[in-house]
Length: 426
Image (cartoon, rainbow, N blue to C red; front, side):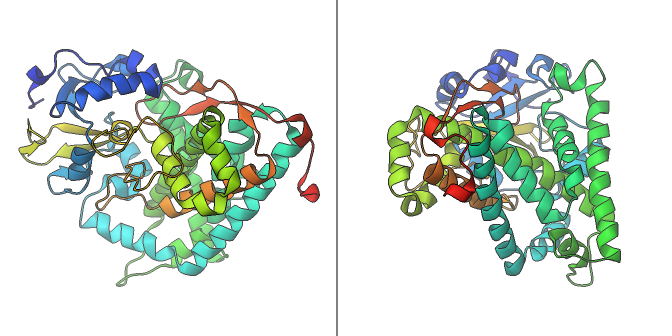
């Protein structure tokens, strides 16, 4: 560590903090936002597997500072890891693709991937998502009271990404289970007493194998899916290798599954807790969809933290950060910053402007999947609020994580008049 540990005595970022709900965490963030970025030790009990004596990070909690770090990759690089944990290089390369790279390689790979998302491909994805949202609400109406995560939140992102990439339906459940592992491996129910790094490596290997296998299959026999576009895309004579496609597939599956799933779940909770906001949406969802979806993402903040590493001595928000120090962006705090948001602890579907950092703070690593995520949220909640507007969810079970704002279970109740009604009765 080369930073200044005297800026903080102890740390609030213990296991207790990460197990707390957002409202309790906000008390810590509100105090931290009053002063410059502060240094905190990494502690194993906070779910940091690689924590070593003397290791720590700078907590960046103010909206303006998050934007500054995000938009200055020369001073704050991504190539040394994106998480609080220092994962082995082979896991880092296999799971984080170009988000854990710096230019020029980052820009080259991102251009190749972006080129595969043609207007025709995006139009097809939008149609696919709309159809999936209808069928998921069909299933909810047929099932009735249920676990909202299993019946709704988890199904849409899994289905969207798997179908978009051309993954056979027989592998959807196994793929989703493996994708959950890296983000929840701190849970005893996931690692079951085994070495967590080994468990992560096995899950990564499984997901990567599906991605590289699909890539080889599409090179031999093209199909109408995104995987075919990825293997065929060429810029300046360069194409993605199977290894690069496998890493991007891992990133897409892990990031795409969990971020949208948890945004859906947090939004369902918010609509239950704020009936006035639900009524506004019921009355005019098409007119409010654009601002509402941005508020869904701000409110949920599905990714809690992302890390950068200082490439040189630099000053940030009044703190002197040394080369090699870890710098952690706290998106949940940035999305509650009272300097930027009026009444930030209010859920407001008409909020505008809404410069949230739920998709990151801009810069070269802005979220590539934001368009797909916004489409999923628009289509799903459009269907829910039109066809079963009075659904309610109960007390959530949360994932204890320093990275993902996760909900594992969410009991859902449908009004009696909506139960066992299928799409044929719309």
